[in-house]
Amino acid sequence: MLRAGLIGFASTGKTTLFHLMTGARDAPRTKGDVHIGISKVPDARLDALTAMYNPRKRVPATVEFTDAAAPVRSGAQALVDVAGYKNADALVHVVRAFRSVAVAHPSGSIDPARDCRAMEDELILADLGVTERRLERVDRDLKKSRSPELERERDLLHRCRQALEAGTPLRALQLAGEDLKRLRGFQLLSAKPLLVVINLDEADVAGVGASVERAAALTGLTPFLERAATRAVALCATIELEIAQLEPPDAATFLGDLGLAESGLDRVIRASYDLLGYISFFTVGEDECRAWSIARGTHAQAAAGEIHTDIQRGFIRAEVVAYDALIARGSMAACREHGEVRLEGKEYVVQDGDIINFRFAT
Ligand SMILES: Nc1nc2c(ncn2[C@@H]2O[C@H](COP(=O)(O)OP(=O)(O)OP(=O)(O)O)[C@@H](O)[C@H]2O)c(=O)[nH]1
Ligand SMILES: [Mg+2]
Image (cartoon, rainbow, N blue to C red; front, side, top):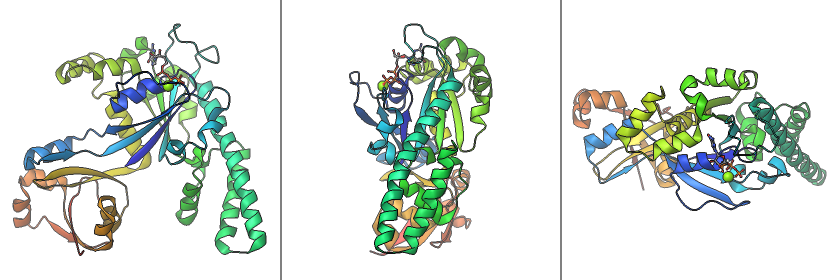
């Protein structure tokens, strides 16, 4: 499951977006609280597979969202120790571009570019603190006993500190292999892929549509968004929330009137998947049709581990058929007849849309 933490200054629309994404309809959240909700990933392919198998259960992939009230003074520092942020795969920065005079802006004016830079500084500052503390600990440990792993960790921490001091978020560091894994282990906020959600004004939605370029130009965010590992989605959270409460045909009409092909929920989820390089594979049967999310490039055996560690451990083979082939042939049996069900080993790189039956020994 993909985990995303919503961040942003006070009253930018984080909780509104949280409601949109998770469908949570409960009482207003109290300040200082952290809330976690689950969003079901909309997936037309899972719909088609469900229609084919008519299973007892349809289980979509899920994204877990964490929403905390904006830390008023302590900034991102307050998020450093919150599990939902520390463990997040990505951060979603909700930036206020809506103008409503009814909602006060803590900085007194609407300026999305300023807020994006300020949030970046907050993340960097918070990471600098964590990096310093970690470095002190590693140095202390190294005095007691030398180990090559600790030395590599220290070198990487030095690199992180250098980048942070220069005002560079760690997600912009070009790391690979073990260092990338180590960096993830540090759980630093600026190292996480960042999705910027531009919370548009109601009056701007029709002109912008789903175009991030137009939204960025309108809100002065173009230079900021040209950075690496940063993607954006433009939507108006309050309008999207209204639309989400309509019956599907009405919702489609409303979206169409605004020049939108997809709901805000769909766009935020898809952008998150793209940002993280996540893909889906499916397991099918009469009992259950289910979508699973994995990072692009994941091998079959590791993908099996998403389902159950026993399947990963006892992995023998993966029976794989491409989604398009299954839909074109109309059934698994027809795919088998035409030799379209492949037997793959543990090193097979799972492709987006693969339908997999894992064979394993218990
Ligand atoms: N006009 C307008 N108002 C919005 C929009 N999104 C949110 N708001 C309003 O702004 C106020 C704050 O929204 P929230 O979603 O609670 O913001 P938040 O970021 O969770 O705020 P904190 O948790 O207090 O930091 C509410 O009154 C929302 O109705 C929007 O797109 N347009
Ligand atoms: Mg809130």
